[in-house]
Length: 78
Image (cartoon, rainbow, N blue to C red; front, side, top):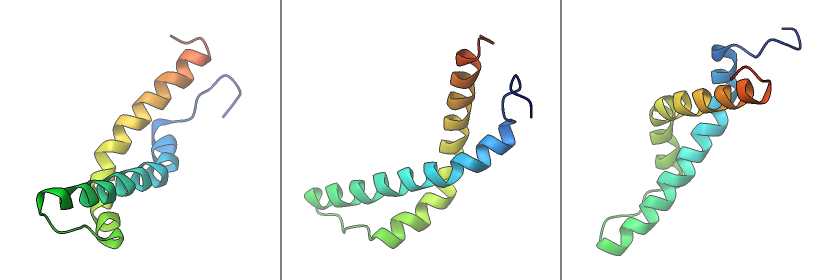
């Protein structure tokens, strides 16, 4: 990769997946805590993490598109 070339979508997707999945897990856990106010059982941190693994895939696709667009804009390609 040269300085004028942005990272490929796949590489960026793989790099951001861990961070996106972590953010999804935190949000699910907080949602589970708020659900106690209406009488639902709390969501454990482990359950939130396990749910975030498949839910992180579409969220990461959106995040990767957004970051890729920001990189292109910063480098003057858009």
